[in-house]
Length: 199
Image (cartoon, rainbow, N blue to C red):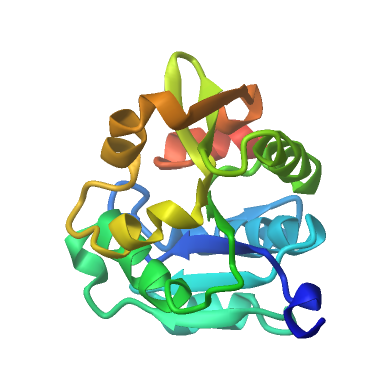
């Protein structure tokens, strides 16, 4: 009985980048009165997942923006190496937790990804729980995405600027793509942000 009540899917929110193209911490950019990082964190929590937030650059400000939310913090001191190291840091934490059967990776710069979208992704993953379920948009396969436990060791070894895309491409026989046009919008530049908020 003991472990039957423990969460089987973990949520990982990557919020470690310096956002050089954006010019300031984009995690803290505000959309509809809420910072991007808090919107994304709330979406993961509202989808029913325990949340692990990976910080790096601007860690103190990001943690302040998340104040009051229930989450576990993972600081990536090597954040400058790129997204791969942030993913690796998260899965180094998750790997020993044998009750966790899968993990969802979310980004903090996809403001149209809400809890409903993540629930649909989770439902799709349940149809192929041993595989990889990834968003598909504009011919791109990417986050948010869900990995089965068998991928955790490979994810924990990631380093540098390459994220999980190489692993996804190498596991085509286990890949389930879900059409999520809302994942196409990610905020990388001030121009994209101004377009989004109507500024």
